[in-house]
Amino acid sequence: MKQETVSKDFEQYSDDILSQYNVPGFAMGIAESGEFHYEKAFGFRDRENKLPVSLDTVFGVGSITKAVTAVAILQLQEKGKLHVNDPVINYLPAFKMSNEEQLESITIHHFLTNTSGLPPLPTLMGALKRSIESDPNFKVDPQQGNPLDALQTIDTHSDLMDAIAKAGFTPLGEPGTEFSYANDGFALLGAIIEKVSGLSYEQYVQENILDPAGMHHSVFHYEDLEDYEDIAVLYERGKDGDEEMIVKSNHPWDAPAMRAAGFLKSTVKDMLKFTEVIRNEGKVGDAIILSPESVKAMTTPHVSCTQDTFYGYGVMIIPDFFGYKLIHHAGDIKGVTAQMNILPELDLTGISLANIGEAPSSKLLFSAFASYLGKSNDASHLNVEPVNLSLENLQEYEGTFMAKDGMGCVFKVENNDLYMEIPGIAKTVLKPIGNDHFLFPMRDLDTTIRFRRDKDKNIHRVEVALRQLNKVEES
Image (cartoon, rainbow, N blue to C red; front, side, top):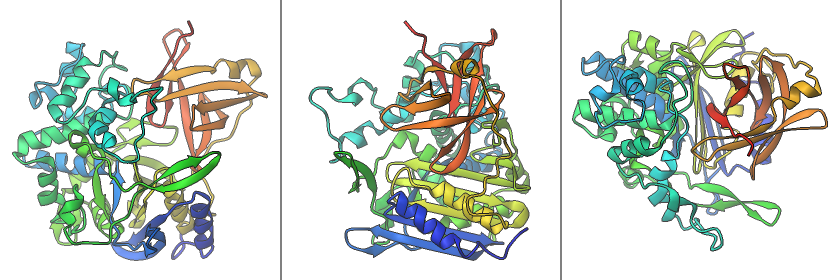
């Protein structure tokens, strides 16, 4: 049953979680029919100088940028400049991969839905390489050397396409058949936007989305904010022995070739204006950003990406969030954890932003929406039940899985439970829920992983964190 607002105990609930995660600064806003309905500002945009967070504080929004890029592509389709079913090579002839027949079949639609067949590649780190190496907090172990030395430096879209061509990967499947989250595809959508519009990606977005929507504190470059001071300082987690520390690390990473995938900076108030594009069938105030038909295409559940979630164009869709369709997307990058939620049927939109990585921004916005719907703060919309698996069944999932971008997971049975370990980061027990699916909490928010089988019914991949990782064969 819908309430008038989030429950009164949500404040204490959210404060407790934010303190538990040691989040320096956090801001959340929820709007109903475009009008502010709930706001929360926790902690500091600058902890050292005790400067508080506000709803006008500029944070990074990370991969929520992908929704902005999708809007730009759909605008250009409305103008007759392109069509989402056009092959990518019509616009980017330098885009190459070893399988030429498959290459010709990859369309803009496949980039928008992360179904091009591209596996996770180390290209984002290559695009961030110069920025990381200039970061005062970046240290090189003399014994190990610089781990970035092995990466190709990627400064431009041409560099990115060259790196993809040289990557030597096997596609995950035919275009349209396999989902795996790919920053590369959205980065190259930025290149297509530049090609057909004659403007830089950043200028196109500014002139055709941000300015018309009244998002006056939303930029890709901090220097464009000029004398504006309400900007979040970036923090990261460090270690002093076994004790976790929160370290000021106010050197934003940038990746010019990847800006269309995750580098917008914005505020809660501005991002709530952007959510109006989806909630209000393309309109933000008096400005028409998209047609209703384009919004429908953007929010169509084109491909399954987890147990309960589908991917549209730059957004994710949960068809049954306590009985309603939820449109959402998260963002994670250095000094950023962001979440955007939209319940069009209830005219409800929300944004949460934090100035540190691995913060519970998604959990808290999902909890606020659940509370608004009359559910408990920690309620899960996932309608799944754990199942019992024998020790023999569990052992089938054991193994090491790796991707070319360096992400790896180890699965091992201990005391009749299956554990997933991301070396050096986390170790989590998984709950089987059937059909090769398992449930686990990620920053206190329930999510799922899925093991994939080949034609011989042997497990050969795992879907985790929206990416497909290949099983490493034992030598």
